[in-house]
Image 1 (cartoon, chains in turn yellow, purple):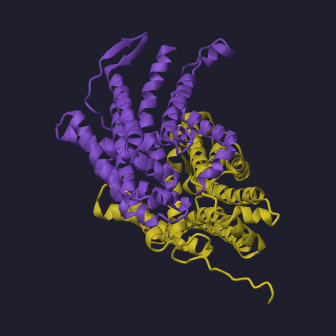
Image 2: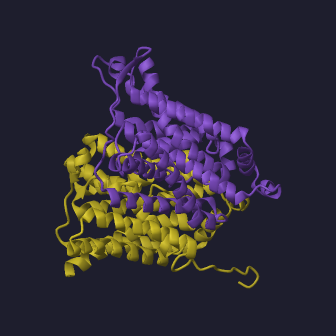
Image 3: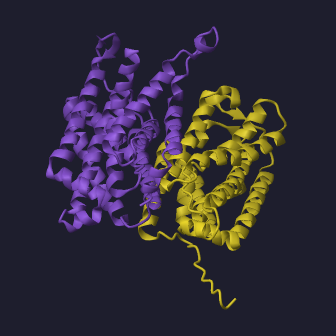
Length: 291
Length: 294
């Protein structure tokens, strides 16, 4: 039971970081990133590369966390000035390309077999590290969301042209957001690799991106607290249905498919009946004269 | 060289027939429907169900599958997209992923993850110096017929005129008495049915598996993007261009060009061309893109 709590908490903390990172991109800035799994995968493969090539763990960690935002910039460069349809396609494509590269180029981290990474033996330590990362992510994103930068990002989300007339270059802020968000997701990836002790392309399918999206949309895009709440709900469902499979003796892939079907259904139902999410973003009114 | 051309045309046929549906729904509803690829998967499995499990002839099974998948597309529109007509295009894209996730998981839950094969026999043929199979000819013929029918429907009938009117100016079309929602329903039926045909052809040529959606996804959307997102026959041209580029890449012997040993790009790298094409199009067509937001 204690093991289960520790495992769930670790999972929830890691996926909350991914959710918060997506929330900064989509919820605050309006960037439709359909490849959120990519920075996560880059972080994990940083750890995987270091492990396979006999490099110290910290070099892999630094590599993953630095490379994720750099690749993020590379991805948004062609899509930066374009409509969100193209954003979605480019990020989706980039995520798949990365996964396919990991499958087809075994020299990086043992291809489809996956690579073993040093696993944190102390599970409590793993949980505390995950919670620590979540705390760091929360502090950064809370400061951004509540401060003047958050206000500007919301302006960009609602109307890029308006932001431009205020003398702010939307693309520069979108790049800033991408760097921060992808570095955080990359850090989550590094930690994920050391928590599970194993990195394989199968863990970074397109589907994973949409599990993160479900959590963000369910919780309330634009609201950090909502996103964490959404992640708790989604990931609790995720980990507990694994035990349902064991108790009921149903085939585990059937349960996994039904779980994903539920997530898809939740995503659609939230859009139909509660588009603002469970804990909506608070609308703030600013009165310039009475400050 | 004729071999490369033949391979490209066969592959382009399978992609084009799926891609036209994406372009069709984009042209009228202005959003990229990521659930569209799932219609192809559902269509493939329905054909399999009627042809292999129920023992009907493949052609009959495909026809039933097209009608049922078209119906599914209409039903999903009624249940979901119709009620979200006014939200932002980004919102619709995200919802379409929810729909896609739901459909793909249900298909996988029903049929399991293992791949299945259609028990079709393909006779090898030699055609102008290229090795093709009788199956390839059927795929290309089916696509040609489907495209001619679609062209006729869109440009030679009142329904087609109405659809094109809706695509170019929905408000004006409605004021002129075109029943918008009924036309949109028809559009969904056509794009669902075409996706089912494309998915069936794809599955017969390769194999049927729930993960097929990811194999079709990138080439389909790359083809549609090359064609200009809302251009139905542009998507067909896009599929041809993409397919040619992919087949050229994997059949050029880069090894002997650069060094002594023979080395080919592995076939798995086809998708790089798809994403690469997307990037190139985005870099060189920045002005057209603004049109896509609303």
